[in-house]
Length: 266
Ligand code: ARG
Image (cartoon, rainbow, N blue to C red; front, side):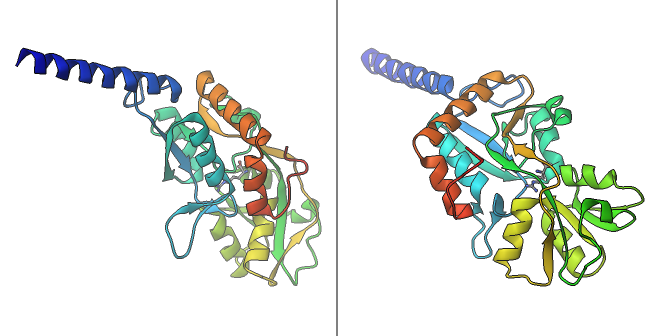
């Protein structure tokens, strides 16, 4: 009997040691996280932003460039990832409260956000563009948006930029898809949103009732966000990203969603 007990204890101890070992490999979980040995990283993303994050019509599975990238990063780090759909303007609060470990959501690295969260190295170069109805010939540049009605997604850089336009009426929508609906319904004159998302929308929906105006208005880079000062996790994310760029996995994912090899997104 004593021997069995001893064996059981040894087995238990090795399990505990194993788990602790895996924990080292996982994210740096601070006191606000549930467990110091949890192996699953909680990811937050606003799944309304094709081709970066969205749910397919026939399956609820999260799809897109960011989703494939974070799964590949998790694999590289030896952790599982659990994706949660969180409204874009709720992502930074969710990081701050410790409800999620990571936000990947086409989030542009800005000075303002850097005060609130930590960012990985940039992983995608983006910027804002304008979309209007195809028959609109008045709006040809950002300057033409003066005094116009503009739909944006709440909490985004598009919303920030639109609010700087003199006399513009800015309508803040919960999702990026809603901004297009507002445009198509004729409730607004223009949408200000990220270029790759506007482009994908037009191609994917073969929507010739809307068009993109001009070139990029801003240059922005997407970063993966973590709780501020979680430098350990930032380091792990950057190492994984670097590895995926070196071993061709990043390029593979890029090609899957954008149809080309990355040029300026290396
Ligand atoms: N890049 C823009 C920003 O950081 C928009 C991101 C919106 N992302 C989303 N998943 N809806 O503000």
